[in-house]
Amino acid sequence: MALKAGASVLRLTALRSTAVRLLSTHTRPEVEQNKTKNAEFPGAKAPYVTEMKFLNETSYDPIPIYRVLDNDGSVIEKREEPSIDKDELINMYKTMVQITQLDKILYESQRQGRISFYMTNYGEEGIHIGSAAALDPRDLVFSQYREVGVFLYRGVTVTELINQCYGNHEDSGKGRSMPIHYGDKQRNLVTISSPLGTQIPQAVGAAYALKRQPDNDRCVICYFGDGAASEGDAYAAFNFAATLDCPVILFCRNNGYAISTPTSEQYKGDGIAARGPSLGINTVRVDGTDTLAVYNAVKQAREFAIANNKPVLIEAMSYRVGHHSTSDDSTAYRSVEEIQKWANDESPLLKFKLYLESKGIWSEDAEKATLKESRDRVVRTMQDAEKKKLPHWKEMFEDVYYDMPPRIQKQMQQMGEHLKKYPDKYPLDKFQTD
Ligand SMILES: Cc1ncc(C[n+]2csc(CCOP(=O)(O)OP(=O)(O)O)c2C)c(N)n1
Image (cartoon, rainbow, N blue to C red):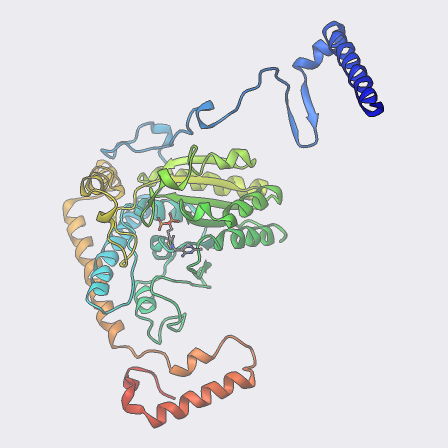
């Protein structure tokens, strides 16, 4: 009883003080002013409102998609046309053609059992070349796996790429990684690794290291897919990039699919770009089938990132025209009509070619010659790569430890004895020898 009486006294007192508070808020003029003033919480400086409302993706307009070229290759707004000299424009287009030829032939070579795996880049050539052309060769590149054009544009040769896919002794990775896991230290291209998203925090860390160097004039670019953007690593990396003020371009290739998962199942809301402003990152969404739009976005992102030591998020919208990889048949989860529409009407190569033609610097003859040259280069190189020996079997025991521990030395010795005992059981003639 005593408790109950006590509780009702407390309730009465609380009611009275609420009433006093309410009355006073309606009467005190300084409180009137507070309504229009921004709140000054440590975690949010924002206006107060008196209407309780949830916000969601429909509360805002979708982030627009920046483009320079129309589908017919014409420049929409003259002021947006970048000034790129003729030779570079031609080099950009030729590299795009080289990507498609590399893809066609290596894809087939996997089908013929000559290499174990391959991933094509169809539909994303404009992303590779537009971004690579806007970077400085000293900028550090972290890629996912579908960015071979960036490697080509940096000067990695078709021979080096094919040696990697064949895993022969001339592969700088010594045949230890799956095909397409390229890397090139001299050209500032960090070796690709398969686990999705791991490169994103690494890239942010590298950008942080760059910013700590005196007079830094380099940035880091990190490519990742819409699927990889769902990894926890991506969120952590975005937030570190923003809070630690890192000169990194976070470049999302949104090609509509993560293997068979369409973006409609990958995320709700307005794509990857919408995450940028929410974390305080300068963000732009571009048409990834428009090489010039990608070029402008990366060029400005680079300048901004270096001048301000801040990240930029770019979401390049595109379509993965090929199957996910040689292990996939994408017609199981999307229609052939859908693929054809993007392959034909929105081809980044076609748009760029029409642009070059409109400038009078490209012709059908040049097209034919470039196609033949790039196809022949791949076929010739592939035949050479096949003849090259595979790395010495001892390589698989090396390079992990600076000084090989006794247990690994023992395994290597046992392997040597085993091969001596059963030489006819292994294709030893295909491997380098001592
Ligand atoms: C951590 C991790 N989970 C799953 C996979 C298997 N996997 C390889 S590629 C891929 C899809 C990635 O899609 P996206 O990032 O959109 O890139 P895209 O292949 O479309 O270029 C998945 C799920 C992986 N490699 N690593």
